[in-house]
Image (cartoon, rainbow, N blue to C red):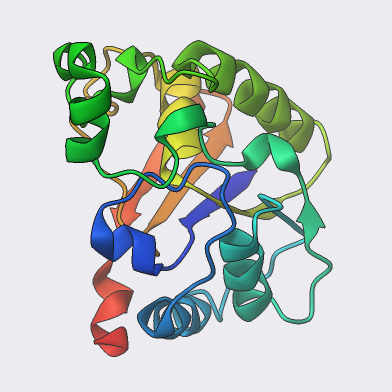
Length: 200
């Protein structure tokens, strides 16, 4: 079995550095171009299952990539729920909750947003969705999601402290491929972005 994970295309909040979380923010013009570039890059793939976060930016991306497939919306693939952080930049978060500085902007495992969820809660829901996919008898599945769930996938399959998970930053419209065989999960591609040269 192979899973092809795609992070949704760019939004205006990505550009502004705002925490989107589970807010509904649509793709911007570049994000739409990126989604078309992903579709071209994956044109040779024959997917027998396609699932997506039910948030608009992910569903938009999924429909452009796989217009002839049924896209199954699954809220378990939603982005990290950032609670009161949603819509804010990191600087604005620090101004309101200065104690957050200890976490660091890139270390989601240490986030504790007021009214939101922890990384462990995110990891549990993503792990459940991942198990369902692996039990669905799909040979080649597409998953369109967000950076937070992608980190949770790596943690679940490879462990928090593995070389695979350390220091990874997921790009808008990046592609990650994981194959499952008798030896376990094998990382084929991590945040591939070479296809995006056509979108700029």
